[in-house]
Image (cartoon, rainbow, N blue to C red):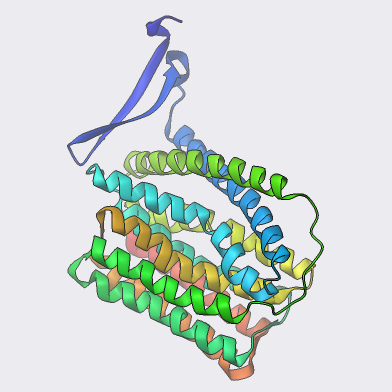
Length: 346
């Protein structure tokens, strides 16, 4: 193939580094418009979700072989699998930041958007489908991290930077959350018969990993281009496009749990994903190179996330369950957040 038949698209960020996005046929480059960039973002998200789905299936089978309880499967393995997109994007963002590429608003915005979507949109929708119950003992432990995680991020961000050291502290905080929960729930249920073999599960995991890595790079690269081409703040793209897009696995888990009448998995997956995003995903990315924090996020987004977490916890505490009327109010708060965010960003 002649060199003249191809064109390499490059973009410069932070005035210091150029990124090669694709080696494209020159004829195709004529069609490489704003909407093609958006299409590549969606393709990247699809690859992320495909990979995460393979991982979740394999992880759940392995967990059931070792008699891990239904709630903890949702809280740890399912939430970890569902959060692979956010985690890999955050790690990739940390690597980009290490190369002086400005992606902080995109990454932090993604975490905020994902968290608000999880306990606002997805929990609200799941509550509309059926009553969601949670034991008081489990709720108290979850509430500490549901409310504490955004508070920690708000405190760490006061100097407009989540540093590498603070990123490591976030990872440590997640381990403090995960390990006691997993140990206390061991042997809570009998061993189940699991379809498929160990080799099949491992193969699914490898395929999923490849898809996730490719999808993360594709999504992040073209999200940067999208913000630039449309002239919008990276945080807006992160909150609404990446944050909502990467939360689709949690929505899928909630719908599947409703169909199978396993709402404990749904609650566990939503809470676990929320905490994992805030502590582990952001912490791993920040530990590589640190992320800058937009002052607007400190003034509006993080306080709203704390408020929403408090509301959710109070609803569960007051009646030990989440019913349709509470779910409607949570959805109303999410809608209000979306409207205010869009209006203030214009």
